Length: 172
Image 1: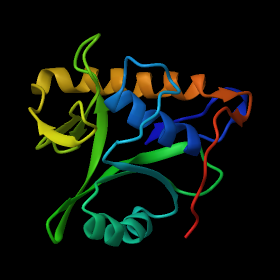
Image 2 (image 1 turned 30 degrees about the vertical axis):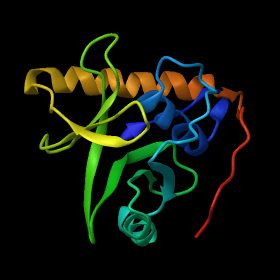
Image 3 (image 1 turned 90 degrees about the vertical axis):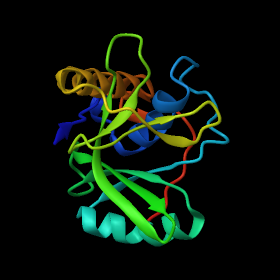
Image 4 (image 1 turned 120 degrees about the vertical axis):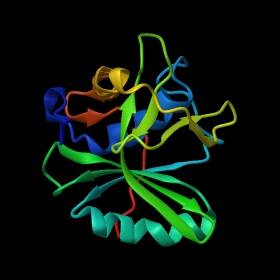
């Protein structure tokens, strides 16, 4: 569980779905850079992870697009249960808890599976690809750096309790 409390009491759901694709794919660009062409979807869910995955699974398989889902127990908490990747593999799905990870200062952010069996990064075209799993000794500090960077970016996209950029939400 990750505390994503933001300055001014802003809701963390829009900020996390806004900053994650930019942190993973376009980390050196300005915070408001377009992510047109990103070949992954990002969402936040209120409720059980099973409900969130159930809602997204069909879309993921049908469109063959991976999703990253930030899960929250309810619509008021700022505690994130974790990031869950839903990655299509033909007619099946790979589903698992992942963590943002920056192995060393200046390195790109990647996603590391909770069980350390897989790691993922974005290529220059915005496609999610598998990459080498960092050495075990580097993962814990890398995950701390990853979450610190996500929190820093989230704080940069809110003014008080207001999310700074235009956005939309889907409720289902």
